[in-house]
Amino acid sequence: MNTQPDNLPENGIPSGHELLNWFNGKLGHSVLAAGRNRVSRILPDLFGYHILQVGELADVRLLDSSRINHKIITAQTDNTNAEKSPTLLCKSEALPVTSESMDVVVLSHLLEFADNPHQILRETERVLIGEGHVIILGFNPWSIWGLWRLLLAWRGRPPWSGHYIGLTRLRDWLTLLDFEIIRTERFYFRPPLENTVIMQRLQFMEHLGGYCWPFFGSVYMLCAKKRVISLTPIKLQWQTRRRMIASGLVEPSARNTSIQNDC
Image (cartoon, rainbow, N blue to C red):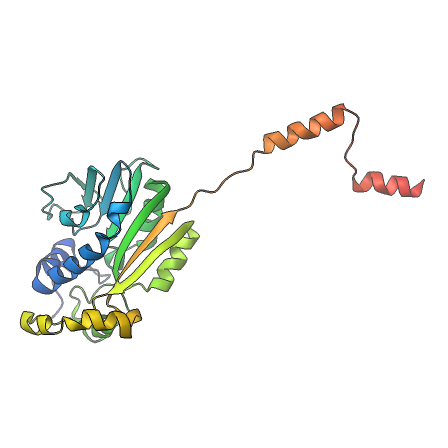
């Protein structure tokens, strides 16, 4: 008997509808709430005119703490409930957004379920203005959830069917795109149990894990800033050289030095 869902693509990545259904469940909703709590501590300090959230989750409440008025949410399907913000249906790898136009971009559990996470990061870098910020939420492979994924990935169901990306690898990808890592946090130390009563009793692990084993939080948040590379104007250097030649002061060269030595 085939235990794999019929709507699961051949590459193992769950469909947007299936992924959204999991996050709308009790356990997925708990994960989103924890991520929203962490993001709300950063967004109020990020200013600008436009903020963009990319991904199937389309959690409009994730951007509530932002002071930016113009909020845009993108999704690949129309399974979202973005009632408070405009929704743009498009592929995450090819955003129909003008280059260097967004002040903040939020990627909520998108990279681990994407076919091409590198292209999504390249698109993020393209649409961000200089000194703009990106906030990324993802599952930590080096955690109890990562261990659960190793045991349940064969089922092909979210969130275990995703390709979890470690913080070290994500930092390397962002550094290659000229991003500066501003802040990283790991949280959600409870095991992935569907029983609400047990999860409430294990709430103490959220406080204890932050002190005892902070590197093994099942979810991480990363905030990075797009760096602006300053360019040295070459034209001014050529103008300086022309003035030196016009005044009779010729810069010494290896050829002139050798001729003087021969004489």
